[in-house]
Length: 378
Image (cartoon, rainbow, N blue to C red; front, side, top):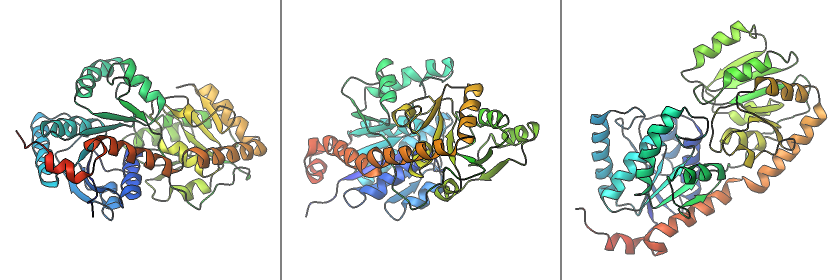
């Protein structure tokens, strides 16, 4: 019997977020075919969720901030983990894990695959950040075997900045498993839900400003993060305590959405966010910023509305339109659910990712052949 191929997954943080939930879907969905080992920088939500399906190592020195001594220790630990686990492939997610994981893998001759959930130099990022990130990512692109972009928009950005070569990127949209919970978009007294971490690039304040101008609308935020004090202050400043609820981190987002009539994701920069897909899966109209790959899921006026980045006036108008028209909410919610079923159920993405693994693992030959012929560590 041929052993399952081994894939080492490296991700920086374990907090509940889009990249972390993507990793969970991947490990849970492919665990019968692939032996996974997940390395994450903290013992948070992700480590607990993936333990039933994969070996997990928490590596505390793997952090977002730049710390040369900690980064060197992390690099050494990653090299040790690669030697011990003997993976056929290293699959990295997020910026810092993407840097150190790919360097460690290349130094030991292991193929690398990097999933870009949103580039650090995407449209909407500060010019100074772009200027710093592009040279680093371009250098890393030369030691990366393959990229997965979660949207065509992210592929375009990578090619435009010469971070990836034509033909080096596979576009595989994020997907979600189905759940039984459904929203009732045409119910009275409409509620908007935005499920997102309270930190940049999310624009909770813009949504608050818009909701303040639509008196027949209530708002619930699911999530937490460093911007929470600023958001709480804005709720008080706008006198919205009777219409806005801050729910904190929730592990029952489908149930939260089932109690809503509109899903929202207002942001200044995105890849292909799961929050939009969650709203579609729940059968709700989605109001979202027209950034990143969101328009690859939402057609303006069909599954919901797209609004320009930072345009509170347009956002207010679209929310008011939905708040006043239950039939429109119902029609858009049905379209959103139908589009999710046809295009964004998780199985299609899993099949495509498994095909990428096969391309990289000894050019599709069995994993045992690859491990037997791998060149010894220099």
